[in-house]
Image (cartoon, rainbow, N blue to C red; front, top):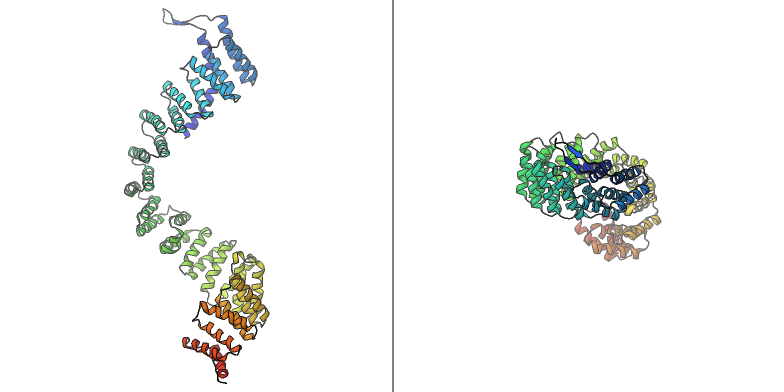
Length: 557
């Protein structure tokens, strides 16, 4: 506590500055006889030469210590104690000397002798308490502070020290009682009540801890922070009724408090009333004192990831959208907002917000990637997607998605050589955790097919199957292209049969199966598979019709 820190500083200064005065006073009291005269004045008896010599030795020892001559000071003090072992001031000075040299056991021995000779000297007690604290002997430290408080009952700081000593000794009840003694002197105060609350909590006595806060709130009814603390404490212990009572007190004292509505939102969420929780958040967010970044951080901690993006996504959208629009710089939160919109399939809206962000700060690839995903899902023509993908390539040449989307745009425009060029760049960049690896190989295979380079087509299909041997689409396409080329037909048959095990009613797969059989000269079987296909497909494509015509001609021969 601040008070205790002030006390430690004050005590160390006093112990250092007043030590000489203590020693001289003790030496003088040992060498004089004070008695009242008839006139009422005190008459001081003359001191003997021996007594004056001891006093001078004590002063010499202090002077030597002050000048850094500790060895000479120790020698002088030992000579003094050899002549008078009951000189309590000399024992005290020797204890201080030993403590400075980190000879703690000797320091304790001498200060205990000083206390025994003069138990009413508060400075001896203070030094003993300091030594026991340094040695981690909390029980003995507390004992000394009890003696100090008894000697100086009006010093407020000493009660805090006594309480701290008991707390270190694991005696929280005694620590609280020390503060109660001070409270009876000065009345209820925030430092006292909060310190007692912490002590009770450390002792696992929540009821007493709450009682301290309630006493503070009762003494200061207009201080809303105590009601807030009580509400939060009752929330932690699961007493929702009491928590609501104190939240209402805060609201009554300060209707414009923006955070009380946030706290009430948490209360209603715990109580299971999500709709009311949303209403309270909305009230809090309407307060202009709550800045937009605080609002967004609150939302990200208030809702779980599942709630944020799925179950309560509409609440989040209604609150986060206006907050984002109020922010001059919302780059930090754009990804959250963009993902929220993307999860709701609002790709065009997400893309617009992401484009605004990139216009302010184009240095974060994560924002570019989210924008490209949104554009890929909302840009029906693909021109804007390709434009932003090329810009992203220039800024982030080691990421795959911009190359892949540029290649996809080129493939759609039948520029297969450009598609291969872009995909080769993606392959060269490498695939982090396999991201876009299979898709890149697949599009390369299709592009090389269009360019008539079957050896490369089959090489990339093999890479795809190495990644996923049960990829039915790859098995189908690979088998079909082998059939078209008239090569490795047995392998093609095995692949399409494997694919049909997973998707037995797929029209495209049945067509491939029929065409492989046709190429193998198994016309009857090919016709059976094509008939199955045409029963499922009421509006056959031109390719299906061509295959059916060719199979019919051969099966009739």
